[in-house]
Image (cartoon, rainbow, N blue to C red; front, side, top):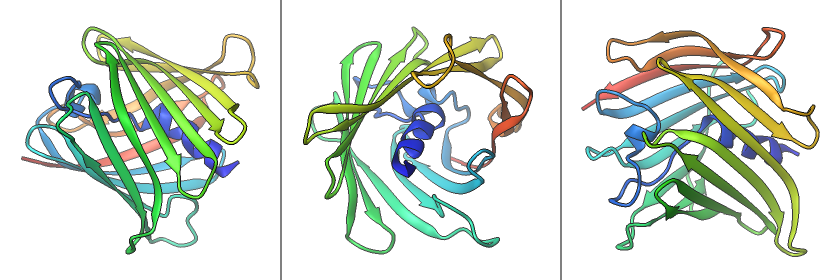
Amino acid sequence: MKIKFLLLVSSLFIISCSTKSNFPQDWAIEELNGKPKKITEFSSYAAHQMQAKKVSYYNESGNLVKTEEYNEYDQTDDSFNLTQITYYNYPENDSIRTFVTYKKNSKDTLNTGTYRVVDSHTIIAKNKFHNSTTLSELEQKLDAENRVIKTTTKVINTKHDLVTMQSSTDFIYSEKGLKKLIIKNKEMKPGGNEITLANKKTDDKGNPVYCEYLDGNKNVVYSLKREYEYY
């Protein structure tokens, strides 16, 4: 259940892909301005009483090269402890990016995977969990501005070739950027659940430093704070 929740969250809020010539640039796909070198993000998920910290590192071309995740599953005190590190690699084939995630301070592999360009508007990511029959697949659809407009997430039991979970998210934009999300899966009401972006604050480059996501009853389901280091 924990794996399924984290996969769903990642498909909604953590949108990253490779940036070689055939890929949209990470800075562009995440709608980032001013060439960030490092982003530290603090997030809170109300329904699951979970808090997390994530640090993302970019090179000068806007490529995501490393992420660090701290206290991903729960928080028992005021400090965040490193839980895992992911490294992103760029083979000669510039339609593919590979990644590997390690347990903190060790060489123990947690999962490996790839991002692959299918066409100019489609990227598919596959994530294989170590010593597990679980595979996650994330399909991203992009518009002409390389913004994500739809994601579809599947969790697959590779032993039985069975899809155990599937969900999709539509991303709705206004001229000011992302406006709301529409999340759909078979457990939700027809038409899906709407999550609206609210109380957004930005820095002097226009990047968000705080925002909240509200459900239909105006309850905060997710919030984040960000700190930026620029080139």
